Image (cartoon, rainbow, N blue to C red; front, side, top):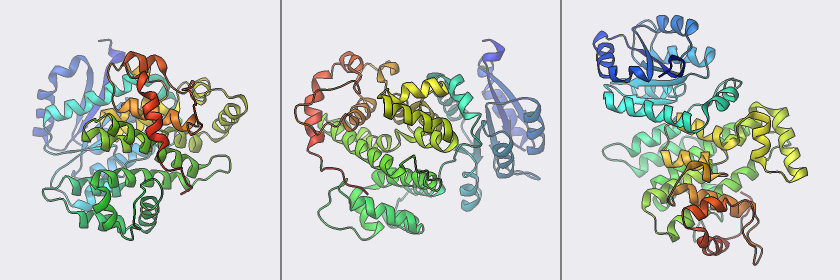
Length: 407
């Protein structure tokens, strides 16, 4: 492989045996990765200043400069670098603190194959999402947001030996604004529950852990961006649209009798499919406002105008961030290609299909009687996977969903 095409990775660990083990087990990747190994955070920063890197993989507990301090400096001075932290037997709160400045966390000791898979997946995602164009945009962003700590806590509890609904409810309840928003959504038309829910524990018990996990992540993301409200960008409207797309996608997955993973992932993918719009609106205010104005006045497709202005679209940008956060591949794919699924080269119906159709139905104003599919649908893609004839039934299933209300 051409040296310029190799991915550049730096490993930082103060234990020589760990570094030697990584060098030995990752030797086969030398044709694809350009790897640097160092035993101190200070030296890592010096190397990074002289030699740009794509990824930093660092131990958390180190003398002089620990992993949290190192990644804080990297986030400040090299925000485009992917930050991965290895955590072993450290205090719980220290791990959560580190995750505020890391894109991914892997358990230490980390099996070399798991590390290889995580990095290979990350690089494959970059290639799929036309990495060069996205990097150009990402490099202009002061810093990409890191995964919310409350989401990390919930995931940790879900993956514990004995996950507790009560503990997860308590985690949510500590955040007053999060609690209020979750209860507001749960009691809204989106879920259509027959009785009012008054506590987070009731919500968790009724909706299940996967649904609550998805709601917490999306609510937290939208809340962070809503602090920078602009009169020209309606974040509440975007959230309502995202909620509806997630409900439509889930309805389609259920009517097609797809497995439980698709059902739970459809909610997450629908809620986050337009995340890239938030990133563009908050980081490129003037140019993105102009893009939105043109699409509203001319009727041109938003993503086409985004490509003209930025060389990429909100779909790829949102998927890029979710890839850094290590969400499941089907979710990332659904976000990346929800407008143009034919580019995914998919040959079978999956999560992408459900999100694409759900998004198209909401944008096309499908409530009108006898309305035919319009250009929002990628008919070529739907024909290729043999489901174009399913659109009328999906339309009917989603039409039966209660009319959207403002949250």
